[in-house]
Image 1: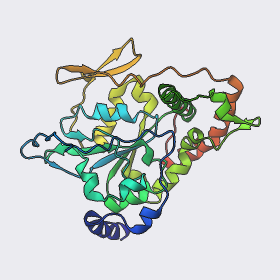
Image 2: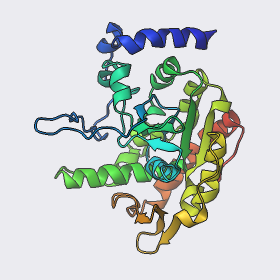
Image 3: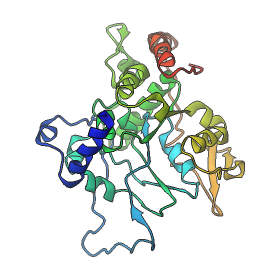
Image 4: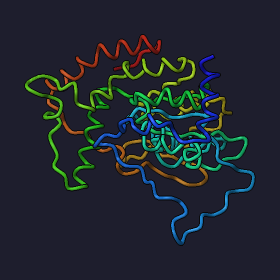
Length: 311
C-alpha cells in the first residue's frame, strides 16, 4: 500500500516541482563534493543532434546508489558494454541535492540518455547511499526500482576518499593536510571526519532498508571487481534480468595503470587518470585505530545484508 501511494505521489511530482518544504531544506552538498556541470545542452549557437529514431528518454530502471570511491564509475563504464544498457553520462545528484530535486522529475528525466524500448537506463550518483533523503525520494519515483551498491573495504575507502580530495585541492591551489591530521583529533580517532562517516555502511544501509527490501538491492564487491571484473558483472546481469552479453574478452589488464581496462566495439578505453591514484602511506597506529573502530560497524552491516566480506 505504501508503494501504491508513493506511485500516486509520483504523478503529481512529474508535473510540478518539489514541494515548498523541500526548497527550504538545507542542501546535501559537502565542500569536498565536485559540482555537477549544469550547462544546458542548447547553449547559444549550438543545436543538439536529433535523437536516433525510435528512442526516448526514460526514468532509470536501475540506479547505482554508491558508495563514493567504491568503484561506481568502473561499474557504470563496464555495464555500458552491454547492448541492452543505456547509461547516464554524468552524476545527476537529483535525489541528494535539494536544489536539483526542486527542479522536478521532468528535469531529471531530460538528463537521461536516449534509449531504445528494449534497453534499460542506468544512472549513478555515489552520494545517494549516504544521503538521508535519497531512499525516500527514489521510492516515491519508483518503489520497485533495482538498486546497485558497490562497496569496498571501508578503511581503504576512507584513504581513497582522502586521496581524491587531496588531489582536487592541489589542482585548485588550496592548502592540504596530512591524512593523520584529519583522522586524529586530540589523540583520538576523529569519527566526525566525513570520510569516516561515509564508511559506516551499516548506518546508511538501515536507512535504505526502511524503504526498500533487501531483494531490490544488489551489492557489488568492489574489491573483487578490481581483481576480476567478469564474475561480478555476470551477477549484475542476472540481477537486472539482462541476457549474458559481457564476456572475458571485454577486459584486459593494463600493466601501466595497474587495473583492468575495457575493450568493446573495436575500441579500448581505460578509466580517467584520476582513478587508481596511489594512496598515501598511513601511520600504522592510526590505521589500526581506524580499522578497530570500523570493525563493529562492519559486523552489523554483514548481519543486515546477510552476507560477509573480507574486511
